Length: 418
Image 1: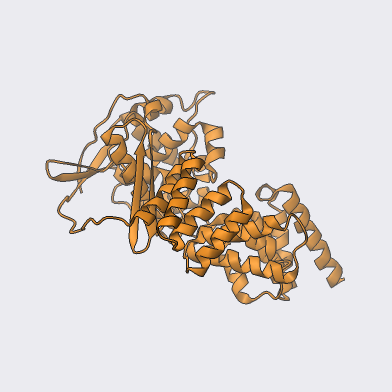
Image 2: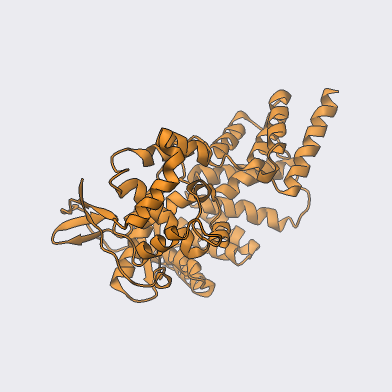
């Protein structure tokens, strides 16, 4: 590795989050869309690169914790080339002074900085931002990823890889830190704060030769379909609908209907969303969101009426297709748990989907209840009892209605056994 002091800027933190980007795979094309509100070329480039890093992270077998995911995106999203050399790890503008000031206030009563184990326990961005503040959560996430990957103390120790592997195996933040740092885990917060207060944020020099990649024009329909996601992310559903309808008009193919289904679903036009999903499925879509939207739209159109076993089985098949094409689609896993008790015949494959979901989201108690329901229906009452007992022993992982359903299921099992 070739390290050099990273460039720092004095731009106020509030001005940093000024762009959004979207990477869409519309085979055989990869479509990139970016918008920078400030109009800065640097911000536009950073928005594109952050989108690229986020897209590449989806290839991991297991999702990183939210803070590590955001931190890696920020740490590698500032890549730049200067005098024929590439550099990664440059701090985003304003981050270094912000985290250094926060670190100095770590032990004060109103400190926004949080211990690493709490940072890594966050699973919802909206909840994390509400608890810690938008600026602080993003900045501390970046700082911890930078500490693991680029600090002189941690670079080359594989601590980041060990930490990511531990989370992939479902360990808690405390257990993952123990695996990542061994006996040094107890001192990790103090080492991190020392790093931030020291102010030496290094970056790595990497080769910047010709990639050999070629650039080609994207078909207009694929570009319009990709712009749908960007328009929705920016809060412009009217633009998104125009782009989606334009894509269908230009080329009535799966990707165009995927985009239209997404727009209609966001607007809660269930009938239109279902029609668009069905068109995309007939055309061979491999977009997991489309399968998920199809299931949700069908369920919504039922208007709360009890599902027949055959209807529940149809919805279950749709949700299983959703996670087949998009492995981390949490809402689809939760729907599988909802449906497993009422669907027609259940199989071993149904159980595999739930087990896979639990590996991705070990703190989701509803998936554990779903696995218990699957075990009950396949005749393994002992496993069902153990899973329900464990789920109810961790009520913080269940909503009140989910806990009630788990208790009723346990009562049914007890009655059958007695």
